Image 1: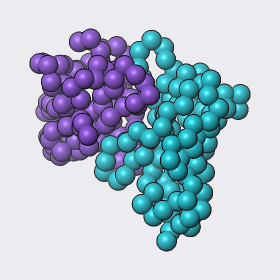
Image 2: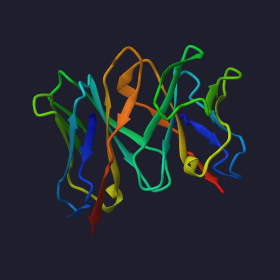
Image 3: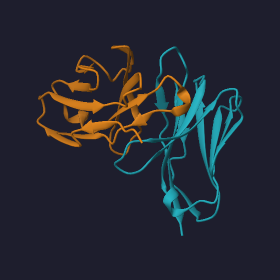
Length: 114
Length: 113
């Protein structure tokens, strides 16, 4: 069964550093997303991406964050000047045009800012 | 303000019984409602989608209902098994022209043998 692949699975970074989280969505999906989940809290929407541009973003997704699809397969989330409160599990997801199939999520990257 | 509420308390049931989980929402007009399963440290896994014009949807031991008047969805697992123990998330899609799924807080289900 096709999977969404995320790397790395764990990332520890110093406060103030930049991190790039990587994702390979399912190849025939057209919509891509980033979500985050702070420990013990709900899964929060960050951004959706379609046709090589951001289609929607939440209030969380401010200038500190950016997304990119640098080639035909990868989808990245860059977090600049990381803060302690950025520590969370970050999930990438993708979906086809047909909503009946839902979203397919990756296993996540656990980001720890120290 | 907008809210998607699910039971924050864990639901404990005996194997073989039917589990019923509730999702209530406020100030949303979802065109679609989805249910996901999440295991600890893992990403959500899609289970079922129901549309606003559908009252009920079934898939194997799962059943979802959607009442847009009550602003509520119920998620049932019949003949529950210990392997069904997980957190179950409801998620709304308002179909504003772009795909954006908003998740509830989730309910933890524990099925005892």
